[in-house]
Image (cartoon, rainbow, N blue to C red; front, side, top):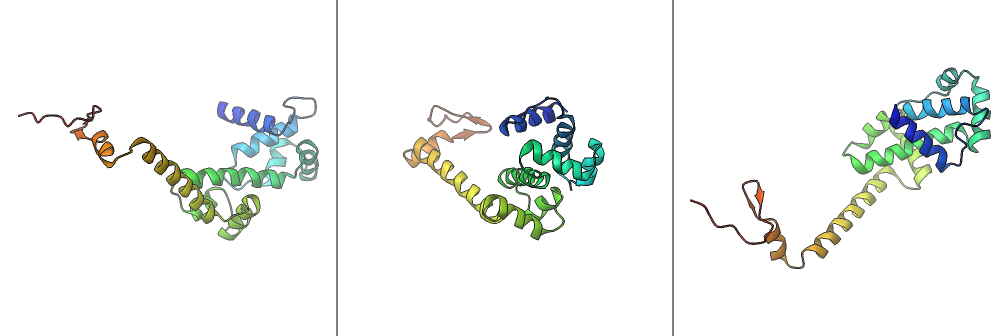
Length: 171
């Protein structure tokens, strides 16, 4: 619950939305519902019911407060979540689509491409390439010679000898 509140405040601040001004309680409840249900199929009717307003009023209220439609807002949050899952897990793209409540692979891929300008596969490859470049850069910076690498990674059982010297054998 606390994490959701922090997320809500962060999103609101990023979008310059006044947090608790008069008339925002419906909007705040809608944001709270969306963020807590982002990993499932978010239904506008369910949000409106939770907030206690009609779907039309919810659409109008959301556009007025945020400057974007509620559908675009939900899609944006889902794609941001998808980007984190793609970059931080080895889940298949289909599993990610299902996890986020997309009805099929095509709608997920279409939404992802529309939001990011690239397919989910291309995004995953770019993340992997960035990681490899950073790792490879670290490797090249840290270990100028191959022997430096092997000296650093000398292990005896579970203990690492950080001095770079090979420990003497104990009998």
